[in-house]
Length: 598
Ligand code: GDP
Ligand code: MG
Image (tube, rainbow, N blue to C red):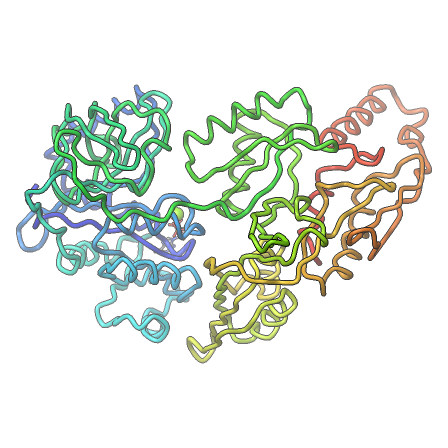
């Protein structure tokens, strides 16, 4: 394809503002035109897909658009993979584009992720086209929202496009704007092949499918290519584009976006951000890659049933093939048995992995509370990573502690500003900036420890603002803080998986909340169970679980057998996700108690 007829763009938006719906409409609009010419091929490729069992997911879609100027353009719509919560995921897609559609819900306005996405688009020098979506809604006010976009982001909105992804209003205008305003990719320089990997996905049948954008040169089926990061060479078995079904091509040229299959078995061998070059005539310099995704949140995963350890290990291995950002290493403790310490990009990533392990691999897991990576300074002054609270060295074995801070931005209707600031203040936040977006809405910026944000913080923001506030954060750096390790003793015995790290000033309060929560969450025993929170040997708070009074069966004396059985079964099930500590069975919920700070 002639480079001047190619346009590569992405769609960014705050969640629920209509990104996916708009993508569907754009595809539909162009299909309608292209169907007559390529109906047969399109259907073929779909059949092929079904046979090979590849799911048709919109990852990148190539659409052909006959523009008003009489020329037919190739538009590559690159979906931002994964959830927008991971700005990491968004930024790598943006690096493969020259333009971005910024979708703003015209009944809601600018939200925290709208801003975060715009910053990323600007960092990547993208041409931004603003779309004011959902104008079919009675509450939509595109003029006011356009002013809001200008005021907060500084984007000129005179050419913003009012649209409805629901009814199809404005779709053609959007396509015209893409053709006119998004610059075509730079043409070939005659140099060696260089293509940027922006995503790689493991497919059971084909192995790793590599998604790339060619920056220079071309890729043909049968070519010998090389991954620059590890020097691995492979032959291109299949190359093509997504429409959004896989569609094979003979070759792809400079500026084009596509996929290839080349016998790679592990996503780590075709790392996102790496450069593909020619094996015969390799480029000397790789393209600017991305920063490697660094796990920021860690938790312990343990099989409820010790016999499932092998299955858990194999399952993590399989997930890792698919997910380069997942980290794990074996961990064992006397309380929890054998399991794994796992690292994630964020809480959502953690939830997704847990859910997949439980659903796809049929595992019953006990999960310990997520924690950030702390740093401890040794007496010699060296900084070491501490990815698990109970591994924080004793006070006499360290000379300092650090924890990661984030820049947190919240957008909120003005009436909730006070309560949100109160929340941030109580979580050790430092106010950096506060401004009005409009007379009714404001933006608040805090620097705050990540550890505070991965607790119940998001729920608090939502409930305090009745759902109207939105938030987004970016990692800043590790900062010195006076941190302590708060240990929990159950029935006089240490329970390391329940240890937590917090600021010295919070230790007392946190100990109190935690011991009270545990008292409620741990089932009664035949004996009294004391629970203590300690710093070193010094208790800072305590509670006690009173002994059990009644037998469960006492409730249904005289009742029929089946009812009794049911009750016993129910009890057995409830017992499943537990680990025994200090002669007491600690249920799954208790491990998360530390997150719920009330
Ligand atoms: P995304 O999270 O940005 O991908 O948003 P979705 O495309 O999933 O849309 C979120 C919700 O808004 C869905 O219920 C859509 O049906 C709805 N929606 C999207 N565009 C429009 C629109 O133009 N008008 C109306 N009324 N609803 C829309
Ligand atoms: Mg969506």
